[in-house]
Image (cartoon, rainbow, N blue to C red; front, side, top):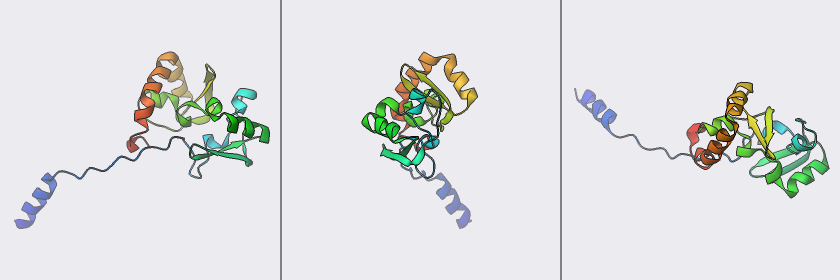
Length: 152
């Protein structure tokens, strides 16, 4: 009977809160490589995703960014905010819905000079159905969505 009473008291006690760990500002592989190793500059200069190389890497914002050439790496290093995808490369649709999902570097779009990635073609389709609204919601959600570890 004492064991049962002790169990009931333990179950009724409030759970200890676990502190949320902020999500990384950049979506990266387990090795810490941003946007799957694709060259962020190439979306703008080539109009398509191009694989980067570890030979032309640059560390920024807690991740390693890879580029197809030294020139692309140097362009990025001079102005990373102009080339890095919005929302740290996380899925733009997910951020607009107030959660995080990784972005796929092959599912992308440039809007008003800003690169956006989405998790998959369906997420991109949903995001594009209300593009201006989704971007505005994403901008509003972005700071708070990074604050919760539950999003990872």
